[in-house]
Image (tube, rainbow, N blue to C red; front, side):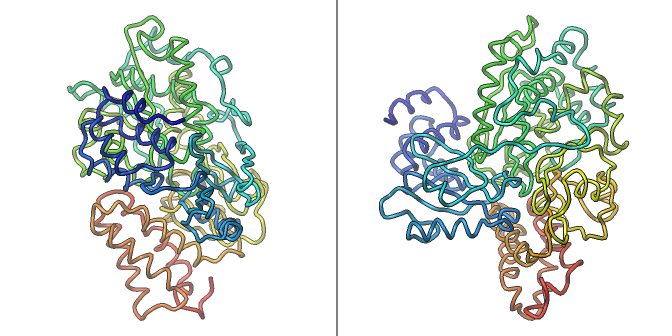
Length: 568
């Protein structure tokens, strides 16, 4: 039986940054967060009720109205859409006699649509929330299983030409500390190295950020270390919300100690004693496994106070997001951890001087931090032996859609896209129409571009992007118009509304894409102008890339925008 009083009591000594954990605990127990509960939480955390309600409304996974005992949210991103998501949603609603967004007459089920769940290799996917129990990701999602409460476990599909980051990934379980080892790289750094030497090693490795921005990692660490302000923080961005991207989920669920050691090494290097792991709300299993790994590491003395008998202490806290793509933007993520709406901040100042709680902060994504232990343990030359000067080290890619073996693959940058799809992934299903590189914020490639090398520089040279490593494959059975409309809906839904170019631009873009079968005079030019305006005038990366795929498609398939007589 859920006891709200005991929950409020446990949070009575906490600050505003405990808002997200409190909201999740309340919703799990009650199924939704009522206005009365908001007022009571307001008195507990000393945060205005209007601001708490604003936070709840900001996130798509929180509910302010009663729901069914079981809430089923079906993913509608392009990969799931191409593999039957609409049929799953329609089948659920037909069986329950409801419309999308409604609750069944017996109060047992609510059916909703949602954006990418990060399970694209098992598409179509769903997120099931059971009152009093919690959330469970289900993939592939089937109507009979969902209504019967049968949720078969999904297992990671991994492979590639090499195993470095993916070494130790096993189906159905996280790698335990006994198998991972006793944090050898951290032990080496604490006993035989120095913070400055660790930063120098990372700089010499040429590691660039794996979240999409490709900023030099060592340089970011050095800037943070040089800031005179204290305290400093380490934040891991595990809000992997880019449609088509799921590599970080595999690392979180499969190699949690690799990530924790990477965070600890970063903290030692920059002089931080506290870190936050921000995991997207759609990754409940990742959050559970990471929490278990943190407890395991603390018990072994490789996290917590006086690590390995030294004067270095480092504590990691998990923050679970509420469903907002914008929180993948680093400053919006800071706002979310602080218990606010996830609005991006204006930069400068940059996180290295004014980050979380206004203090110097290093923020890296999961894959980036997972590369650190190997670099520190084996040296920069070990890491640079793979790839190119500008794309050093191995790289994880998430491949979904029409290939024989969708999954997460570890590649050596420099191989061609053709090699990846036709050899590593077992071949393309049907006749290839296009590849969307970089996810929803990426660009389309044609079959003629399959021999492009998979490096940051080669993709930039042809006007493409590597981004977060998302590779979505579509054969000729897929409607390009449908893909573009789903992307348009995604960005319209995920725009935070802080800046007008993105807020209005994503709405107008989606409206025009929805009428591609019968466009108005001037729509093509209008869509182009909207895209350029968002790209050049938006506050953050969401708006700046919200039109990337559309502008790319306009160059490749102008006939798609020509009305019913066009193809697509």
